[in-house]
Length: 184
Image (tube, rainbow, N blue to C red; front, side, top):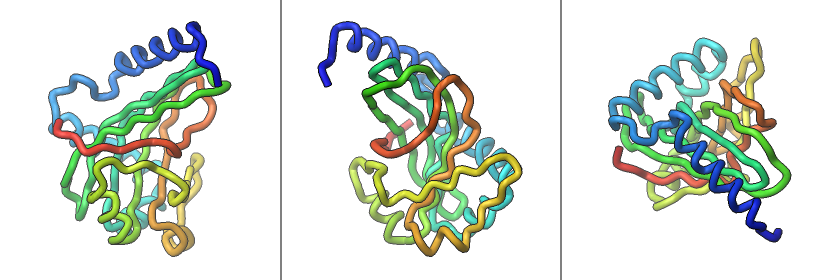
């Protein structure tokens, strides 16, 4: 793909838009992230009751309360969140993703990664930067739908639940997303 001056300019504009969308950049730190994580989990558990069982069976959860994604030819996404193990925050992470192709629009959403095995959680925590890839099973609940942990936990070490989408962009996927430990 050839990057033209116009595509480059639009890409820079999309990056600036991401920085201005209230996704945690410049927030006061850990207390703000933890409050957003608590609110996100509460919303997910009330809207999708099947995720309660999923959370109880998980060895850890990475909660990204607000991911902002925008693109016009070139695009990107950014968010910050916390890794919870045993109900307590153990680390903070940022996520970033770049993309190119036929795309236009912006959206915001929340997502939670459920680590269903100790090995998957340790691989995530030990890596200097973890990239989401094909080892993620997506469970994208619709309004009124319940998730059954029994059918998915035996097949996937990491399960992603994406919800709360708003904006004018189609689709939300985590492939190609890089997670990096941060100090808020």
